[in-house]
Length: 495
Image (cartoon, rainbow, N blue to C red; front, top):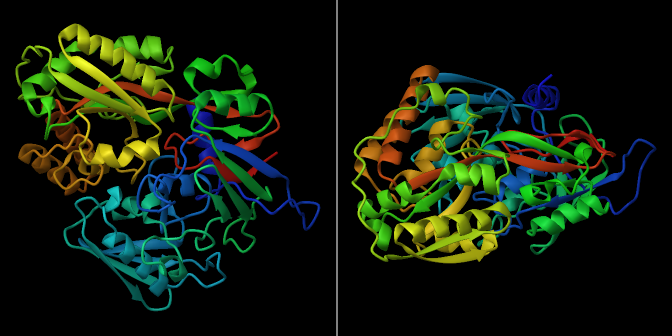
């Protein structure tokens, strides 16, 4: 069986929303309570564990939060807190809730779910999953939630699988300044303590609606340095370590490292609104100067494919539908134009990628300065357009599982994660057409047409399509090597 088929089989056999790490202070209540897992994650919380931004996937991977739906192994919407749903008309859907309990002991009710979704619609900036979408949620009887969208949204059940649309209890929204997921979610593990950006403790939630987690808890360390993460696994300090650097993979025994093809694309986002790259001709010059094969074979040592587009090989239907970008500007000589390229070191390959890009762009005539930070210290400046270019690794299916969503969130005028600062009428029209297409085949075609329109602006240069290396101790069974990077530990994961 191939690695990809093994991964998909594991995902299909796992509970729909599986979780994570928990912590019970070391006590056990019976012989089957399971030992605690120790996990090293690469990305410390950047937004106080708000479910509306990048931290949403931390909560999802730890099995803390759930939404109405989940993303199954085939990339389709599957039941989670909603046991079933039906479409009443082109703008209205009725979701029927299963019996479930919040981690604060209150019941998951239609009014609580409606409030949680309403809060998400009011978040600033809007969650990427809601980019370009206006919806209202209202309780419908004792078990139903009726969701109406301003415009037809044929992929609403898929959209609701986004980690950023997790359902929390009313208690989570008591604070004025932040949403608090500690003890207010519905997943098989609950946060009990968060130590700034360094650690978190999770306990098994015994009243979880699904199967009881086999691990009694998980102690999480946030270790931004890839070498330190790898060392922690190698020396037995942790049982699972995500995002092992390519340069460190060989230091692990072969049976403790797993490479997974993902929908993650590393790209160079060029600031189209200000600075040197406001000039489309200089964006074209930068694209022409970059040799992506040197990155795939050199920096990633074969654990990546050269960038072909926004979607990579893991999005299996994309290559056969890809069209050439049209309307690209003619490249102009850089003539010493000064640019700053920023990136983050949570993914250790990215600074090396940036260094190679610096050399290639300087050879073409740019004057380049690099700035490397930890992600939580870089994100706000990147979103505010304070850099000329940013090297970023982005999972194109993480927000909703819908390939159109990343286009709307990252490359439209109102996109919530628009690092490229792109605002182009033609792009917005192409993305809007894709968003409004219901038929799966036609939606894929429209997505690829939108991709071509975006690439035609040269605001983004796809560099490589990554494989993710996860360190898994031989004592661990049931780890989820998720191609969508939404889960890591399931209720069946234990050591």
